[in-house]
Length: 83
Image (tube, rainbow, N blue to C red; front, side):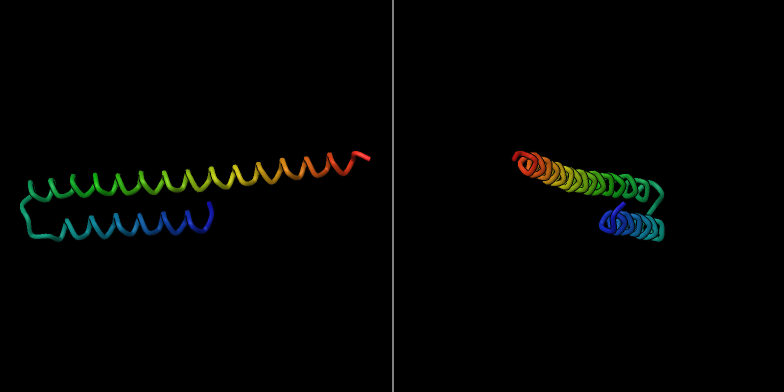
């Protein structure tokens, strides 16, 4: 996992812990607290999904760039061997 991925995981984990702590400390009834937890967990799930989608897109861009560079290198070698 690259540095950006590690940072993203750390930020998401910190957000989850902070969110859970804040909700559990809040002076609401059990039912309200559960409703808040459900709502916040859905929000967090959406954020994680969005972040994973961004990571997937970045990964795919890197793979495509590497493939393009590899193809260009192979073509360069082919052209160099033609005498």
